[in-house]
Image 1 (cartoon, one colour):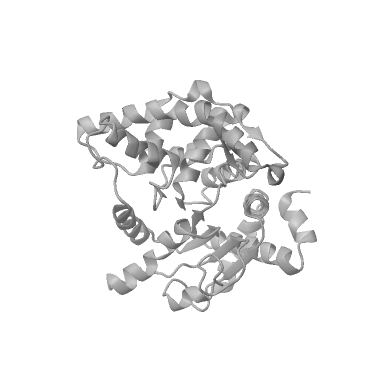
Image 2: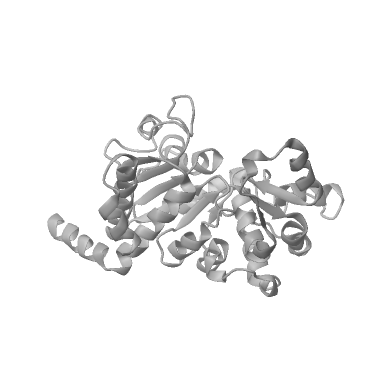
Length: 337
């Protein structure tokens, strides 16, 4: 039994039904020719979401991404240092002294998983510095994800791969050359290191790195270029979600231009539903901000994204691989006629 059939059979009520409904609507949106935008917060790369996300990108089920700078880099850390990671199942029981011991030994803990400082973070540092310096000499400027694409496409890390490359969502994104927006990129390890290069005079200035407002400008251009309706699939909250979803009111209210509202919305969140909290706001609040319409399919799955996101992604992949969505698309088209 594939994941789609398993979910269809078992996920019939309560929060499970919300997952199924969101997955079915995702498939319907794609079957009708829509595109999907992914907003990804948290530490999903360290949770190895790339196993399903990379395939979603390769199969054209994700067309652009907004993510934290941490997810951008941590997928590559996992790619080159996976075997050196340390898992700590009893992380809730660690004392402050044990946490210090991990720090002093070069381990950066993300819940139950420790990222090795030397074989992950420092392995990339000098390669990225050379790419930055080459851009500076050439008078070129790029977005953070474009530098990461240059790093991956250069091949300098290939001998260091420790996982199957097909499980790296950044490699898949680089192959497809989809845009990856990272509002607040400086709030990441690579962003911190970039600043240190400037302070240490290894780079002349910040000018080679395109800014957050330039990323928003690029997002506006990308959104207006799309002829298809675009859905919004959000994992977690914070800047990775709020940054891109604002593009619609920016275009409509600030530019006074016509564009489609987001045509599908789903958020996976473990935040308590609460007005005043962006992560905990119910989807219908976004109607008042000019992001969604009253008839936009809206879903919120209140659960752990490390469980929910792979299930929904595999549900979508299974739907298209079995041809079920194609038949549904034909039925929709026939009904429209």
